[in-house]
Amino acid sequence: MKQLKGRVWLSVIAALMLILLGWLIWQNARIAARVDSTSRYTVMLEGEYSLDGGDWKPIDNEKPIEEHFKKAVFRGRLLEDIEFYGIMNVFSKNVWYRLCDSDGDELCSYKPLASDTPGYHVNLVNHDEPVFYTGKDVTLEVEFPYEPATESFSDCFKVMLSESEGAYLRFFFDALPSIVMFLLVCFFGVFFFPVASGLLGRIDFRYVAFGGLCFFAGLFMVIEKICGYTNLWIMDPAVCMMTDKVAGCFFALAVLIYLRSLLRGRVVKIIANVVITAFFALTLGCVVLQATGTADMMTTAAVRYPAVIVCAAVTAALLCTEIPGKKGFALFDYLISWLPLGISLVIDIIDFYLHISGSKYLQIGLAVTIIYQMVRFGMDFSRQYREAIRYQQVQRELYEAKVSVMVSQIRPHFMYNALSSIAILCKLDPDTAYKATVTFSDYLRGNMDSLKQTAPVPFSQELEHLKKYLYIEKLRFDDKLNIEYDIRDIDFEIPLLSVQPLVENAVKHGVGMKEDGGTVKISSRETETAHEVIIEDDGVGFDINQTKDDGRSHVGMENTKKRLRDMCGGEVIITSETGKGTTARVVIPKKEEKAI
Image (cartoon, rainbow, N blue to C red; front, side, top):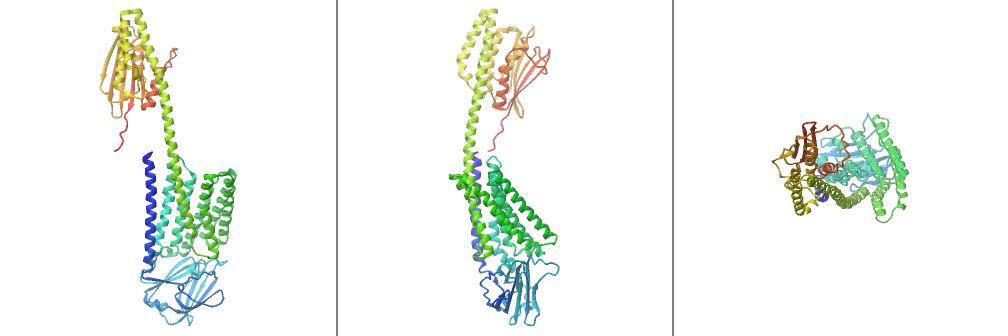
């Protein structure tokens, strides 16, 4: 358990180190990105622009255009910097565009003929094409075809000038460092939190649900970061757009499932299940409409986005209904588990529509929640560890009490049988009975402390007890009882007084019931998997398939079987044949050696 606890904390520390390493890579890559061989512009024109027929404004290529639009028109001249690069990369999302010279001749455009879905597109224009010839007046028209106009211009259109592999270079500097960070979030989702749930000794749905949230949040942020570049590898622009939107839907589902895991009331859980099912059905329907060409994911966003807001509002209301029943740390734990994430999502949704700052508060809220869940897991694991230690102590105390009861039963049983044999000798041979009494008294005087033993003892010690008992029985039966020993293995432990009841049965109910007596043989041996003690007699034997009801107490035999099973995983195997004798074999499995 201690090793397991150490490994968990080592994993946490390693994960935090990976996060720190990813952050350092990200920061250095951001610095390096400023000096790479690419340049980005809003529209690469010097001139003016108008949105939806409004006033003309000067173009500032260093400042993003945050206004929503249906149609944007830019007019002016291409920047002179364009002549120093080999390729112009035009990144467009959900828009069509057309660049024409003053004569109306088309220089560069994107509008697929076979689809009404613009999707995410990357247009690579080589240096040899006419668009690179500066000095001419040009007009750029960009159209957002969806209703309502929910996207800002700079979110839909970007231009980058570079050498031959500029798009991939920009991807490396701009997206890859962040992707490493987001993949770490996915790692937490796939490995840390589900494994953490298992380490607690039970499946904790809260940790599993949060693991799913981390995975889909990381996946969503990865796709969102690379979505502008996906057309470099995925040929269909509509598929690129669909991938981005579906990832967002699954992230929203993961959030709802995680928030549902925090609920405890039966009614609120049912309502949350209905909300989650309804949103999943809506997402599935949108995917089907996209796949069949009926309506793309941007068209259905007019229904999907309000549905997300409604589902989030209902879930938040359900969470609030359980606040009055919580106090102290339970209230703090409950609120910190969803408020930072919920507030950051609300701010991001508001910012999406109003374009206040453009910051991604979701990442902050998710980071706060991940850190708290890790701290909470450490607290849960520490408490579980203490409970496990306490449980082991209680189990050990119960086990020792159980063994103590069984040994307290077997000790009188052993002495009762020895005294019964001496009592019989008192009538048959008083002198021999006297000698047996003195021997038994000396035996008890020297071995009373060992008879209190509850733990297994070396077999050599058990063998000495056995020889003392058989000495008394030999005095009683004289020549009718022969004792043989074939001891080949003593390097093992066995419960105290566990062989004596078996030998007693062989003497009294085997050989002792035979008119001319017989032989009892005690052997020990070692096999590949176990240590064995074998008690054989050539007495009267019995039918092992027939239940014997002789009115006697069999406490010795029953306790022997229980103690062998509980204390060392052993068993007693008895074979017998009427008129030929009985064999009792005690099997003690070998202990597995611990790897060093």
